[in-house]
Image (cartoon, rainbow, N blue to C red; front, side, top):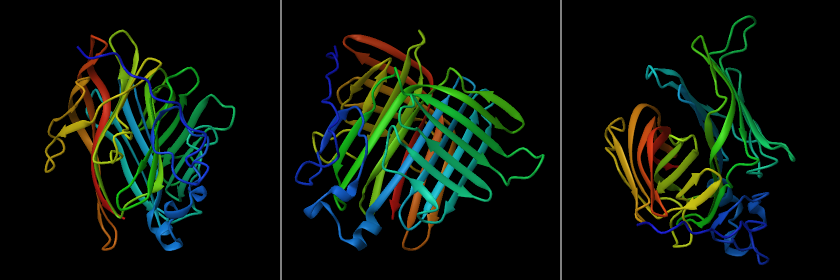
Length: 353
């Protein structure tokens, strides 16, 4: 029998303590602002290293029983990129799959507010991403438009979405030391109710009643970074929203830092370390992942994948993110919940940046 879930301490008021050192740990709740310039001493890199190591991104995933859509904006300081994918679950058809490179700041924006005050944008003539949440607003909002703006012609993809933060489960915040870097802060939030529409491939999908989540990450990261990741947002048979975030190889450098978590209804439940099994040479083969505490035992059936394989000599990226359906068992407090056909993604990433 798995023991009842433990509670995490509340998130601190800031990423740094009074002396300018990071407040390493795993917390329930979010930070108002992530201002790395407040770090001091050995935790504040010199100007050249800041340019090299400073990375920020926001990733979102929203799904209903019909369709899944994922999107991201990534700011790596000296350049940027964004991507989006939409998948029809009934047919297994990829409705859109786009990844684009962009210029550095200030033409791309990922600001320092992971919750209220979030402001993210990426724009090219043929593509636009925007995510925001104003202060006092109970929802996150976003838009993705793919295609040149041509009068009387619909774009290739037009996504307008909301995720309801108020009344939902709390986010997870992790502040972790980074070997070869300095510090990374990530805020994960899953199991949030979704609203909106997706228009793509001549069809209009409603996102109302779906479930989604967000990943806000901001840190001074190592030159070479790699991880496996799993993220799912869906519902149990009784309609309870569920979200799961699992990682291996990242944000696990100390016993007190761990971003593995389960959102069940309005509750955030921390999990043990995750162990992945997958075919690195064929990511569309089935995956499996378990947590060492025995809470999760999951299988993943990929249906499609967004990949970005780039070799720019000094910068290299092998990013592979299949999207599909998760299934398995979730054991909490002696109760086993069965997860069936839960929309989500897996990820195998190795990057030199």
